[in-house]
Image (cartoon, rainbow, N blue to C red; front, side, top):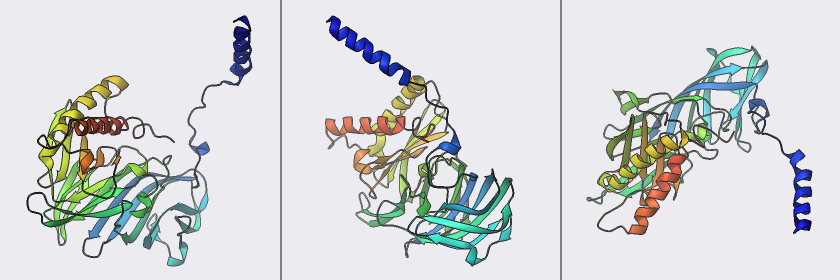
Length: 340
């Protein structure tokens, strides 16, 4: 026994000097592929899907902060065609826009050095709506009760697919605010991270403008749209909703009750109140088979969220509670606090 104690003591004495506290977060030393001389502060993104052609057109303005002098901007873009670009209102020629599909990069060569300070980048672009759960994707399904063939849209951006919808600094350390605007058919409901700020009729349907998010990583953006129903409640100051395709929202009643319990528990457990005005649990009929912790709008394959009291098993009920608890916890670690 004494020999074991001596061995343990020697082991501790050898390794204790190697232990040290983690260094504070330092943006410039965070691993990544993109240059860090220029960083995004806020995006305003507008896109209009063409459901018949499975394509979309989009535009964005990005408020930037330049920390050093640069002659080019390097950000991420994948399967996008960039047609126009300007910096501080000055248009760039097509020859200055270089897309590297292999490395998923968009490089904008500037006519002169970009001064240290604040700037505005504007881009116009187009892309495709995917069949698989990458970027902006579409889902075909049969409506509950009518068996009518329907289509809905969703997004899946983790880990590096926000760049499929709009050019962006698509690495977790480049946190920024995001304000999304989308054009959808008149009879559709659209959901994003934040509540709707305004809505107006346009020739192709309606334009929905969402409030800006807090500063967050690009992969946490979400957009879901289609012929949707919802049920809602409140947990303290937070509006909670379960959203599903028409005819299925009532099967989200258990998920709604579970969310209220879990949200209150985490508010107490973490000692930091959930910071967004709403939390949506969104059941989608395709795209992927799991769940994704988008901040303020968690998406689930519908079988993992919806519960039919007459048909679903106790195991299904338990599984729903577990996955809601898992994804809701990510609203704090993963969303509020990111890995980079």
